Length: 309
Length: 309
Image (cartoon, rainbow over all chains, first blue to last red; front, side, top):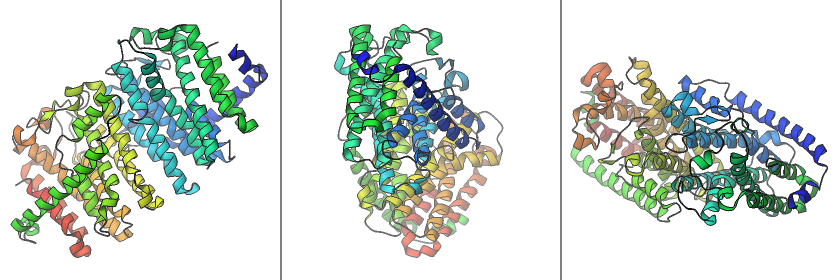
């Protein structure tokens, strides 16, 4: 019911068409920037090949799009922050490559293709993951003459804080050490927030920071990003059960097979869906004062939710 | 003969005593900063434990000391750049943890202790390596109010450039793919420069950048750092053959066992020593115009060379 209320805000079909175009356009802009960036080959060739193999394996580019959309709340010249927005995708790719490694999640498939280590071997997968993480900083520091240096440093701090021991790496570690163990909701929330939500939160907030948004807007973007990220992870867990291997691009039910704690396992499918809906509601509510400026961010929030339907 | 000429510049014994005190003092300052930084525990505990296990496994702290010494060419308040100097050690530790992994160098021992993955398992070793790399950026961005933001960004670019696809990661990848293969001197130089020298070069140059040194001084630091780094790696290869397992803290002859190409394997011990001496000569010559200001950097260069005696 809550979900219906959200969707009813706008004509679903019209929005969906428009949003699909919006997402397609932004994805193309991101891909073009990335393709251009990695057009220059370097030695050793296999490192370059391995990095671009995973980077161009067909991601949705959600995080850079969120960064661009966060920026566009305040400013229009979002092409100026393409290096920073796209750097976020490099970090996302790094995290996927390392997560798939045999010692961690041991996934042979990613987005319907062989995972990086199945294609290139573990040594190259470890090193190309490392290299994508480092290259993200290289990319983030590009075009710095277009931004105030203080602003760039503030954005870099936000990014770094979201992916290390206060974010992604801590969440991933907790996820591993909890595998096969009885986990309570508090621990599951720790994992979801650190592993997924904090990085999505940072992506959209970095857009705001780079646009020099005021603190009220930054707080709203933070709340939006956090709740969007939490909903995103719950829905990912739901899809792991309800979709086919073909739809997922990786084996269906792999969370269950790995004895990973998930919301559906903890509270069932229906309650998990309700929780995702509630997070999306919180996300869009946080942006209400921004009115039409938050149009695309609201659309993206509703889109994330439609994946469970 | 060339080596003797270098050592004859100053009274060897006196210098050695002074340098030992200098290195000991600086090492203590670095260790104190790092201990204080990692005093705050975080969740999950095993990630914290794994990171500090390798970070405090007894390194010489050569790279942060070089950074501080590079800074002291121009300025005296080097305590202001401790976050940046110490961040370099975190990156060094990250690279050692990942290098030791079974898929890469498969080393069970590091500095006489179990390597990280032997102690904590591969998953934690991969993630604590990643975390140290990310935490290095977190640390590097600390105390930024004491530095001009443009200067901090310039230093960050230097650091990042030295450790990714134009540096450390490229060198490490080439090292792996050349294992067991016939390698020419050009390829060996590529490996040594990218894997070792460029990061040492960056460490000392970052000191100069943070001190806002002029371009003549920065070029000199770059030349010094590059040649010091190349000599350092040649000497490392020599020690792998000439020292005992106990002295090395890892199995003696491990390069040979892994069929790694090294200078001693390519041109013999004597010619390798001569090459190291020539690099140290180049390093110290680059600093000549700095006179007494380069005293400690010259001392460190000579110290690196004494390791083969």
